[in-house]
Image 1 (tube, rainbow, N blue to C red):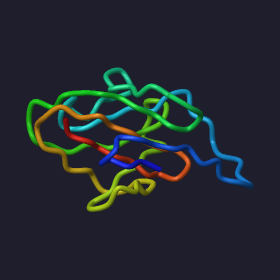
Image 2: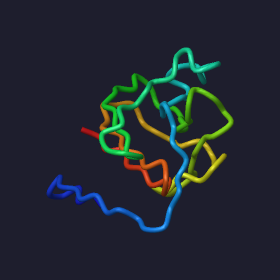
Image 3: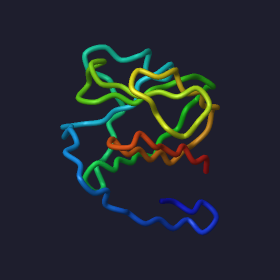
Length: 114
């Protein structure tokens, strides 16, 4: 859970789950020409199990998605919500600097502009 007003967060362990484990989660989109074969993904850092983070700058408006292990086999997107759906729509993002958070179990994400 994140409180963007106070910039504080808490992690809540979800019970009775056997989630998939991913070696990496990366961002792909217009900003990196929709990376092929994982070679140019913007990889995120796993800050706690299943919770990923990256700070980055986008020079232009565009779209992006999250994907696991540099492959399109597992990817998340969302048209209008902060919850990524498997194979969902591209996520719109305006030019600027962002802190990006993603949970690979729930699909919830936050793209927070600085």
